[in-house]
Image (cartoon, rainbow, N blue to C red):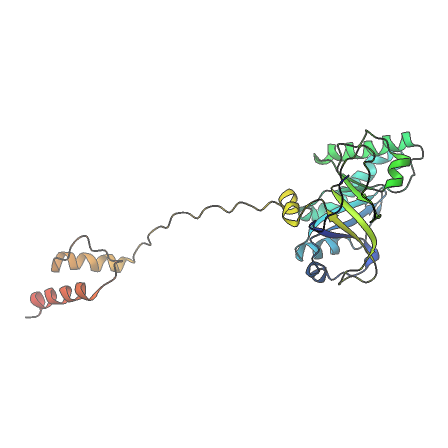
Length: 272
């Protein structure tokens, strides 16, 4: 997999454990995205989810939501996915980054059952939404619980903390989409430690991939304003009574020469 880069876009991931977050300060520190915990298992909603999404979005960060899975078999998948989507529905329009399946614990037991369960999860999510979620996991879980072929079509958010070496290809993945490189970062606006992340490219590339700017339509051609009716009436009187040219418009600037002509003709015709 690719190595980290100082030019990559930086971000964080949070849950209720970070308490009340000052998202404006987070953004001022240069963080441009955040993954926010939405739910866990079949019935646990993170109590700070809505507030965190709203705060991060208002501060200008790109936001994604993640679900911490407790599925022990493919039979558990439907309830988890349905619950995750119920929790995220009120703020779905704010979700620019991928939805995430967080797999860290091994309720499913064997590698074979874990692979079937995780595959059922991502496939049912695709069935419900039309898109695949991204998978969050770490090296040991891949080595012990996944295989080398079942998830290579799914984007990877990779927890890899070894700063002294580049991550090896694992589980069929040859690159990460997002990398979580620390669980003990410090960021202004957040009390205590927070997970630190980066995207695989620059902020401009991140926004182009997940929040492309809406094309601004070209401005319509200017329409000459219609003059007030009294101006048109006055113009016509000058044309009829004083012989002013029909080419003169009621919206034209009245220069000194034109004004002099009008006054002279008026005096000659009505001054006696």
